[in-house]
Length: 429
Ligand code: C2O
Ligand code: CU
Ligand code: CU
Image (cartoon, rainbow, N blue to C red; front, top):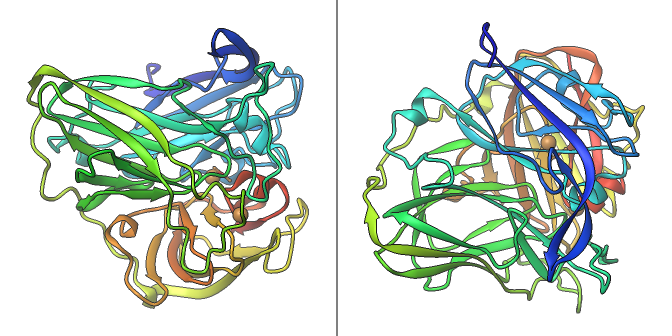
């Protein structure tokens, strides 16, 4: 932080190697280190000035997933950073406390670069969250859980698989570690779960099926904690959960086969829908510090009013297309007017998993198949899983930044689909 309050963060994308399995070096990419990137913390109203230096031998970009920001700072495919070059956008953070992330977004190369390790978590803090009795001691009772699946070749290299949905691994990496455990010293632990996997949809639950409190979706706090015993997260989705621990116990966060929707049709040997994984073992110390109870209310979310919407759009996902079109760098698919509200109707017509992500905004879910959203979908979101043949009606407001030249993206966040063109571009002007 410099004298005028600007937060500077330097990220250098570089290649290296990481000894994941038995000391065998796996070629990897990372920000500042050899795999993944540092967790960045910023506060609402701070001026943020990150700089990316590209020390790779290929073009990359740096996208701020979930961030409300000027289109030229978004870091999508229109902001390429050539090898040896630097890219330094800046903007003022203006959105609620939330767990976001950053990752490359180069045209048609996103799955490979993210899969090799270019990803990191970004946490926004604000006064509303700070006033709540929540665990927020980083690495002590507030733990980032960045989940990726990988498959290693005999030589220790990451292997890309040919599955329709994208690369599916047989090994989980949590914060870049296989088979991790966390030694808890408090009676409540906050896990910030990020599905940073290229294609896999998870259904997280504890091995003893205990309940936990979901306190935030990707865009920030829920109005009140949702008591759940499992949560499905598709690629790029985040959830913050609070789990209570008893002294001396061990409990394991697992991933069970997800319900991908009634019309989902499993292809034998594909889509990984039968896979189960241990994700993270929590080992509670024999004496635990008391860090508080789970609050009954968290924040207030003003519902966006459908009556304020200036229009509706429909997006249908099929093949590798959205509305029968594949992404074209020089085609704008939608133009929104700054400071207006729109309703988007999103439908996955295929019996296969897809999700939907919108840049720049956090949206609210108006309905799922005509019904009000379930508690875990009732907060701010930027990415949502699309059960096949189910209509998702979402509402969003485009504020602050008008730019007639630089588009934002909307796309499926199964990265192979995104790379294959299941993406479109919108301007806000
Ligand atoms: Cu996580 Cu278009 O991005
Ligand atoms: Cu994004
Ligand atoms: Cu998809």
